[in-house]
Image (cartoon, rainbow, N blue to C red; front, side, top):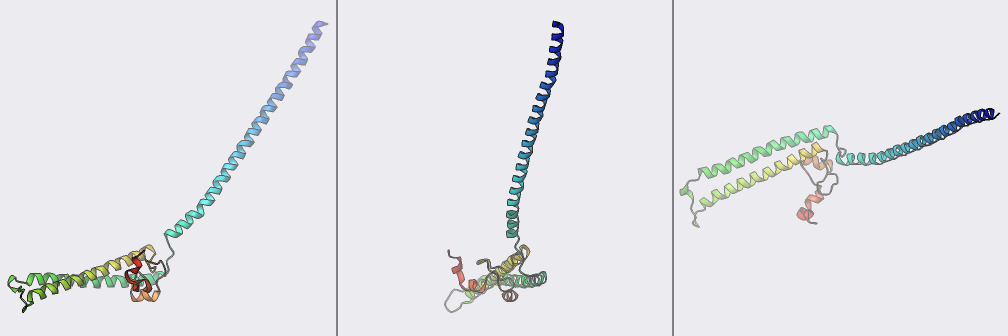
Length: 198
């Protein structure tokens, strides 16, 4: 009889063990499921945050790109016409500058030491020096014009041609057609050096 009781107790224990094991397994499964759910939620939050930050940064990048490369005011046909006019002007100014530089050099070379007189009656020596200085001044002015033309050509390339370098306002097309290397609006240019003051 005692043996039968022990056997039935063992059977009952054996039945309880799998039940306990099943309960432990199901709690482990629930924990794993809740962890997986939490991981998915965290991943979803991170993805949403990345998407939001990318969306915020994207317009800023586009705005910066717009600021760096301003839309050209004029069509390619007009810009090419202006480029050709600038190149023709550049050739003309270069020829003039070289001619006046050669003239100044020739005046120095042709002058003989005996030609220079510094008395009040004869201004021969002084007139040669004056002519030479005049030729060099004209040449220097021509070189300044060449520098302005080069700056205008650079503005065509970078898309800022036709924008006043001082005020940032558009230069009228008519002014650019008359003076292709114009870098300032008329009112700014006519105000003289005052625009340089703070």
